[in-house]
Image (cartoon, rainbow, N blue to C red; front, side, top):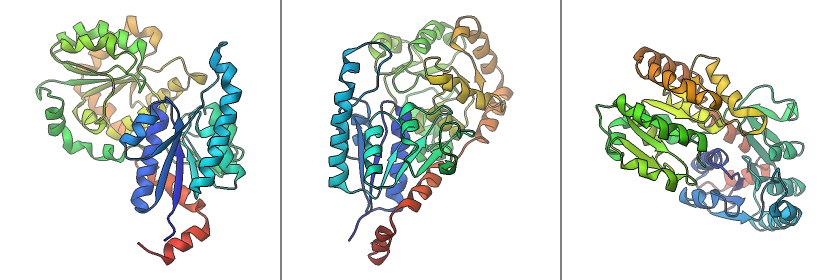
Length: 375
């Protein structure tokens, strides 16, 4: 029987990887017999996270251009040619029906080769300011699924579909998981739990802040789950020896950690913002200032403007964070209001809507073969 085949590519950070995995999971749910292949960048986190999610992945020798003169920059033309050739081989051997890119450098050569081969391509753009790879690919893509309005200045208007960002489906039902989460993380059910998320790679500035604030947290009688990122774990792991502080490089059970959390302190990458809308917890966003067009601030602002979250800039952390945090922690009504308002902004059907658009691009011959040979 003819099987549907999909290639997904996205990586470098969790913000590109997890939307791709969410889309793959939905495709597999719709088409249990389909074949799914991921393509990522060698030595990036997708090479571990994708197999952990149960999918095969092939790596390309590709990386972005650095802003300073480096050896990697001088190798970029060679890496691009190598990645285009390997992408051509992958496409030729796997014969996908649709190719989906969620951002990251590996998706560039892969989707470009797919387009040349007349294979339908879909871009999923998480941010309010698209990355260079997706902008480069947009002219040849068949559809562009976006999470923010007014992206016509970056993408062809007739290709844009407003869907929201795909999120892990296990986050949709966390309300009944609190007791399991308390047990899983060995938490006290009588204390508030503060969850700190610095992004999949970690945040130096947020880690510095939390290390300084632990005494204040202790005085508030709260417990802390602190995701510091793999690059910073050795530097901060000793703080986990304190009572009521758990330091982790990475958190695999995000459903349980969100279920346990009472207040979240987080970066405002697009995927994190979408997840936090779904789980509906009171949030203090600390946008990274080190991203293109300051898009994390714009992501957070879209929530703050609806009075559904709080935001503090890095430059204000030393002077304003303690008061902001203490004020929120002591105000149960404020926590409740933020929780209810952020839930209303959730796009709970985003993953399904994106897959609906992908299905529309499957060649009629493939769908006909599928209907003639039901599983």
